[in-house]
Image (cartoon, rainbow, N blue to C red; front, side):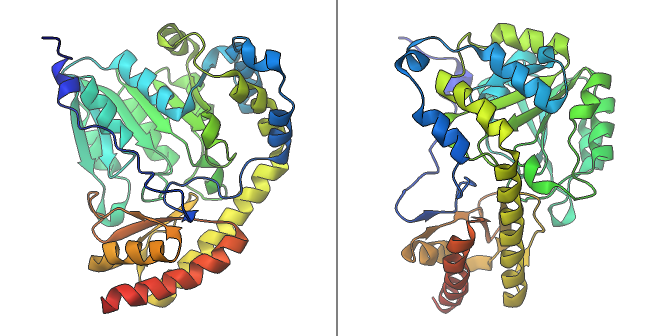
Amino acid sequence: MLKPRETIAGLSPYHSPITSRAGLSLDLNESMAGCSPRVLARLHSLSAADVSLYPQREAGERLIANFLDIAPEQVLVTNGMDEALSLVFTAYLDAGDELLFADPTFVMYPMLGAALGAKVVRVPSGEDLTFPVTDLLARISPRTRVIAIANPNNPTGLAAARADLLKIVESAPDAAVLIDEAYFEFCGGALTCKTMIPNLARHPNLFVARTFSKAYGLAGIRLGVLAGAAEQIDYLRRLSLPFNVNSVALACLEEALADRSFVSEHVAQIKRGREQLEQLFDELGLRFWLSQTNFVLVRVGGSAKKFVESMQRRGILVRDFSASPCCEGCVRITVGTPKQMDQVLPAIRESFAESLRA
């Protein structure tokens, strides 16, 4: 009888967090502002030939390399950040190797590691969910082959200091250290929130992943970026499928990068919305984490499930994170547009009061 590898047979199936598209989806950290009008215009201009011919990924890599001020040989364009993660994990993890990350964090890290038969090493976050740099350093061993760090982190929204990240990169020269910067655009101005891309030249074991799903509002077309040392990116290019990124995504890339005012305005709007959420949570006496992302994590207590259900009855979807380590009673709420926040803020107030009464 045909059977898959044991590591695959033992995996729990991935269940999409999308339960409904009815109402306002503030549960998936998508951009509620949509994409740039210039991107939309480019989509409308696509010809039959644009979609009938195989895509040219290399042209997109040159655009991104110029944008990031690195060499094209250091860039691999991927089908969303998920593919970037998968390529790094597959290239450097063998069965029995160690995958190291702080917990809680992005759910795909342990799933990908387990699928490859790696030993998944979870390092609990520090007090108040801070980045556990000392404990992570202590857990690095000769068997550590991949270290994955979301910065800023999901679901906490917190950012780690670049100095701490560099300590980890330098302490594990034989491991691939992947810094997941999916939410980087939202954390400008924070003293600790600096991209690791300028450090690629000095650290051949360092990789930085970016996405166009968040600040650029392009989650639906699946476009990601993996940057690293040219030699290591060359290895990953051999593993990557030849036409992994579709022609529609690549056609939109130039306009997405060019419309910097759209991104900067969207980021400014998110920061204002974050402040509104934080002010409300402070008023309600709720514990929340100062976010450097497009969402805020808040502890509503044992009534988290009732709170989420109450918000859904008001047409707003938010994400219950109570099952995640150290996140008991916590809910993650994506920041909406200014008009949407006019609806969201009173709904939060009403739902919290209702959940306490239930």
